[in-house]
Image 1 (tube, rainbow, N blue to C red):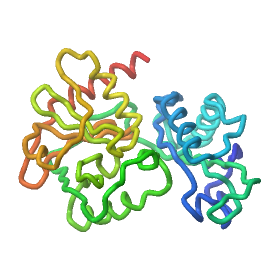
Image 2: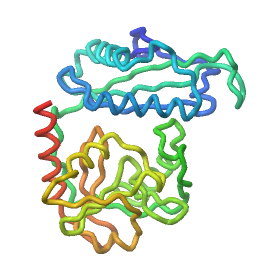
Image 3: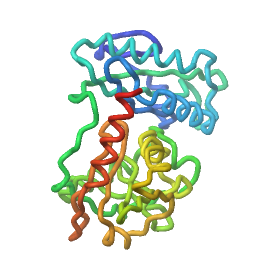
Image 4: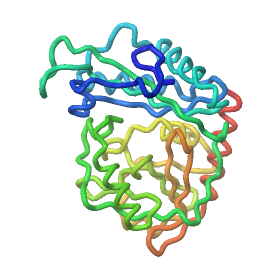
Amino acid sequence: MINTNGKLVLETDGKISLENRGYKYGDALFETIRVVNGQILFLEDHYFRLMSSMRILRMDIPMNYTMEFFEEEILKTVEANPSLNKSARVRLNVDRGEGGKYLPNHSAIPSFYIIVEPLQNLFYQVHPFEDYRVDLYKDFYVAPNLLSGLKSNNKAIQVIGSIYAKENDLSNCLVLNTDKSIIEALNGNLFLVKGDAIKTPPLEDGCLKGVMRKQILSLLQNNPNYTIEESSISPFELQKADELFITNTIVGIQSIGSYRKKSYGNTAAKDLLQMLNVRLRLS
């Protein structure tokens, strides 16, 4: 079952109009959310990022689009799919509605849909990484601005970058901005470890304002074992790093095994993953 504007329908009946602006122009936003045992992880962060993004895109926000409303709709959709067991991946998509060309009709009303699929594990796991190979994706660059940090449906670079990665037997690619700084991976934020120093690109460089990125920064704040820095990452720094890892709310932390001829470990990533799971168990 899927949820279209609060109504549960079979997936085969979940159709959108050809006039839907998300379909026609990518005039839409989405959140990818993890639900475990009936608890929506990082709900507040997802909700406020969505609301902030809607404001940036100058979407009218319906009065009923409260955090409690989306919590109820997400859990309702998960519960309507018993095969999900206890762990689920949720995509919440919000678009501007229907009508207009580039200029929306003044009567366009935002709509949403929610789809869910099963996840195997309740908590975040240490993933195999020795064969996780990455390289730079240099066919296109991201111009850093407010729009580049949104989780919108305009994901052309991520799509063709993923095709490039597959064609070149890579697990992922690292994305650069127009200043030639590395800002993120195709599917998550990037962290670089050198000794006890951990570094991640700042939002000003154009990376996604990731929910898991925020959690990792919170874990590192005032942690005596590490120092954390938000600053630009040059491709030259990759060769000197001890670790590289990618974060997102579904995978948690994915360590990178190699970049070209450089190999990495995963000591800090495992440590952070343990701290993250402890926090979730206590919440």
